[in-house]
Length: 297
Image 1 (spheres, helix red, strand yellow):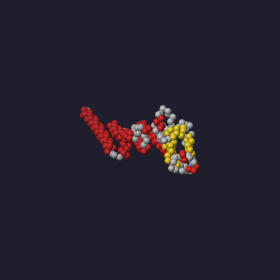
Image 2: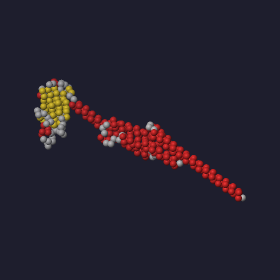
Image 3: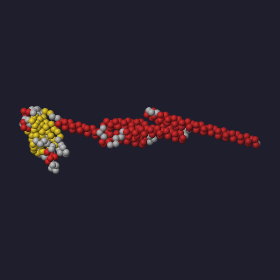
């Protein structure tokens, strides 16, 4: 009986030892597998760092995220491996996020209201729109939450819209400026007239019919130091005349301020109904002395 008990005890001890050995072996295999996976993830991280092409980097990140999702659903998942996945994925994502931030910084015009460079505004718009397109394609693998991508989308759209508005404003200003220049050039251009009359808000000038189209007039802005003034220069044959219109309504100004804006030999023609003073001087054969008449309004 005693021998039988000893035999059973030996068998039990042997079974226990085998069980311990088996589980220890399994644990060793598990740890080796964990170490292997961690090393593989380190290699992925190194490969990512050494890759220069952006598209290749993104493919590595995308593949790693997908592997992580699959591993996280497996029964054999280990916290150490999961932590490693999160670590390298975060580092890779951060590189793309840093790129996003740098592009936004490079294409942000601080004082947009003062920008007059349409070419630069369009360039910044294009760069930001390209970035927005990339974010929309990549956000699934770059941001852990949708709100992360939405923050960038909102900022980019705000910048692009502000640049578009500024471009419209600049173009409107340029158009208005061109129209003003065109109008001024039209006024300043000396052109022959087949009419016997020319007029403006200050006066009307009528020339003899016999002159035909052999006469002309051009206008210049003669304003100075806040004093409104116009200069009308008439020409006919070998003579001409200059008519000056001045706003002398500010009686607080010394008379010298006004007199220096017209030649000394000017004669007063009179005052218009709006209170503008009109002066005239002729040269060579004259203009009004040859038969032209000026009538103030």
